[in-house]
Length: 204
View 1 (cartoon, rainbow, N blue to C red):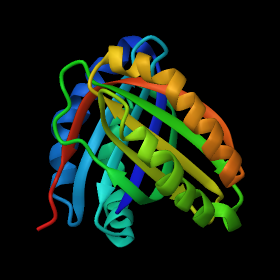
View 2: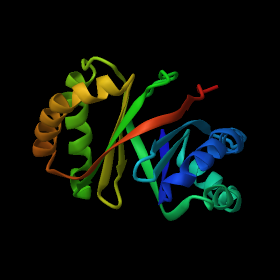
View 3: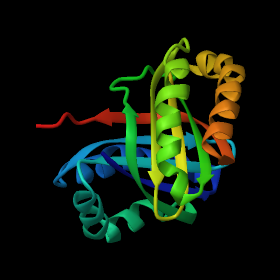
């Protein structure tokens, strides 16, 4: 699986309107693209942050959709977005949640890794972190994303509600410390979001 994330910041007062447009028209436009396998929309209303992730069957589908939808995507984002960052990822680990509840929350951790250590990170995440993460109460799904060429990675974790997200912080801090030490990874940022939408499109 492959992923594209779009991270935007802007005026918090304009965030909800854009999130709603992405949930309706944006979702429709993506669903018409070959290879589309779902999306997530996550917001921080206090600071004015929007994270949109889309899932794809292969790199070709992901990249082609970006070009096809470039103009309309800019139009949808423009009422809110004052900064825009686009990243492309491979997803070697994907435990995706289909229908989180209305109070669902999302944590997104950005990592830096030497390109030669990406496989070490993937192995460490699968064998060290994942068995501990999957036992956390309220965890609905988690994924590891990597950008091998640029030496970057990210971990997303979806929780049923705010209480589960809050309760997980101490455990995940310990897991994160152990994993990053073993995999020679640097944590660059840790953010938490409300969940506006997540969808999963099954493979045909």
